[in-house]
Image 1 (cartoon, rainbow, N blue to C red):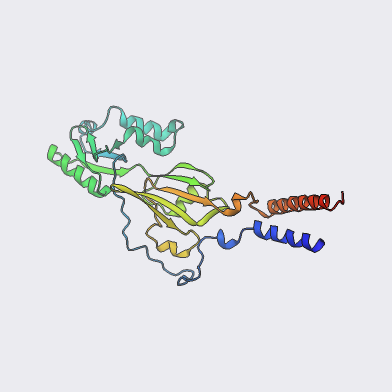
Image 2: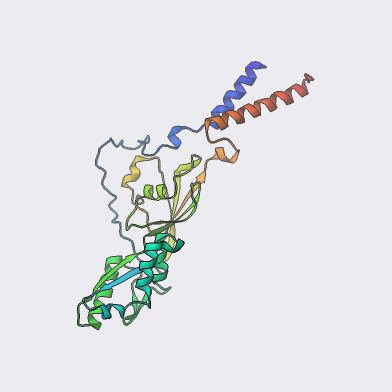
Length: 273
């Protein structure tokens, strides 16, 4: 009986521990060409360039020597509102100011700019949209007006086994999948890091992509960089579904509890108690 109990305890501990290979980033996985340390890894051939979509919010600034002319393109008080929120934050996240001061692309792909009217910018890159607005304003005014157009940071959503779930914001124009993980407080130890799903929006629809965070070759993947409006979803391991502890102490406690229960019920059936 003692040997059976020891064997059961070992099986429980083995099943409740998580292999380092399932939680370690940047591994050289079997079946792939190994990538050595300090080896140069070029980015994927797919060029990273975000395409503006309906319901995106863009920040458009105008600069000219004539301050009165610049004010003609602003919504009333938007510049002062932006300065106040940037300084005091108003209890909101740093990127929320764009919701109040930026231009929302409508469902048909247009932004409505004072004096210029509606301009279609969905379906093109930020730089192409900036040049398009620049051409429109050059036709409207003889005096040179400089245009700056950009998205309000990278907003994305985390679901599943993240330390922090919900809408996240990175105030940069480009961010990697690991920037997104760090910004969301890392993935839980019980997450399937080899099966991270990226739900990405495209012109006219959505695609689901799957990447392996454990694989060093991810650095050369076209999904190494996240895009605005991405949804990142991490499933839990099967070990989570049976309520197993996520560290050695919890695993030992769980194993001891199960063994104690087994001995108790075995003793009852054998009339030992």
